Image (cartoon, rainbow over all chains, first blue to last red; front, side, top):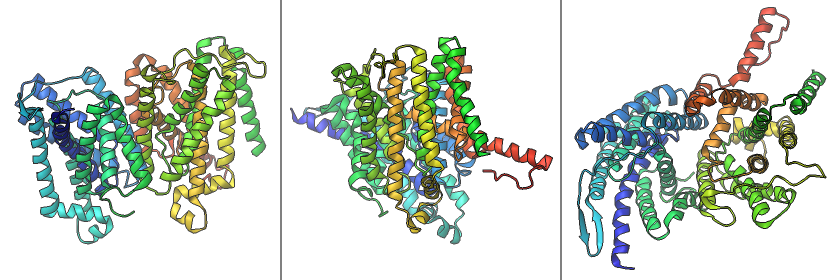
Length: 286
Length: 324
């Protein structure tokens, strides 16, 4: 085993972890504001990836522009979902979960009919590699990590530094108390949903030059991001970030040293965390 | 009224037993057999849901039952009647351990655990080559052995076996749901805090119902291996479990005949639209969302509303039936 075999999965894991954080963060934001566990989050990610695939791959739109369009489109989709499906569920967790489960089918089957089951891929936007010691780092992965980091910074700034973001935090803490302070919940909820869905769409668009897009990519992403939010602590944004990096490393080293068996790691993490420390690494006490 | 219900039920059971006598078509007998398995699984899924827990790993427990019994029969040469209880009990045992740990807290944790478990079960059977066959699964399993001298290798014989198991599970669920225990389940569903405060050990009942449901799921899985003679990692996935939700939601979430009605209606629909099978999930997902957001009572709720309306119009019944 060379040093490169240790370093390369580490860097790749951190880079892919940044992408995981985007998805898990969206799931966390939606859950903490709406009490909706959006199981269809992976499908939004898939839609983001396919939008970028069609725009950049088939219609030769500039990749960055395609990514921005995909983000706006998934955001609008989030707005529609919130207004017509999740707001009528009235914060009932069970109804929300069942509706989201229906959405998984709807989008998965729809994507299969419209896009076909063939994996689709665009040409890498950034080509080339760097050699560090004897590790090979692909530039497109670094670029994907950098874009993810930029989005994370924007969302962090929005949630922690702006008035709207603080209102979102208040709603996440206590919906009724926030409403009593004069925060318009019916404006904050769609905002949270739009941000959550746009993050998922962005993550899908960012990952596309590295991975294939196919109609079923959402289920892997869902299990990964569920294990991230469970590991980090449900509802905790720093927890989602930490969990995302850990999951990135786990998946990266797992794929390197354990092969196919590593695909059970996310499930093992969820089950082990729920067995021994239900609040996760940084979660609030239940 | 009660004797009328019993009479109706007996007539229905006799009718179900007579189907293979009158239906000469092996295809339809086989389709009915499949439906009975679905009813068994959906009803047991619904029993767990009656305490407010959605077990998205329900199909996974069926996979455990099916795989364990199939592997014991195929790789170790067990008699299938010895392998059946082992498969069923394994599913129940796993449910007992996991249920005891994850049912302690309310909210989304149980659902997340069940999603993870569904993926875990599917993947682990895909990885495990011996004796579970890896991604290829267990192929060409033998027919179930003769039971008390009755040969079970023909389709009608299998039909009777599965019909009897289904009826037993339906009766069990019915008896539980309308016993004092069922009232406790409903209490836990509507408010588990309140139930706890009036002195109900909600943990005990939640685990109990989860284990009973998963035992039934294991049985369904074993019967499924008898029915198809094969089991692969994708036989019982998360998608399968979501089918059970749709069946319950369309039939009516809150009342007993709901899941049965939903299963029959939707299985019949999917039989009708078989030529357009790729659109089936879209139709089902729209039905599911519509049922959850617009008609919480499902088809049975609509039927009750209709009955109410009739009795209201004809004024025969002064006290209207309480609609759900």
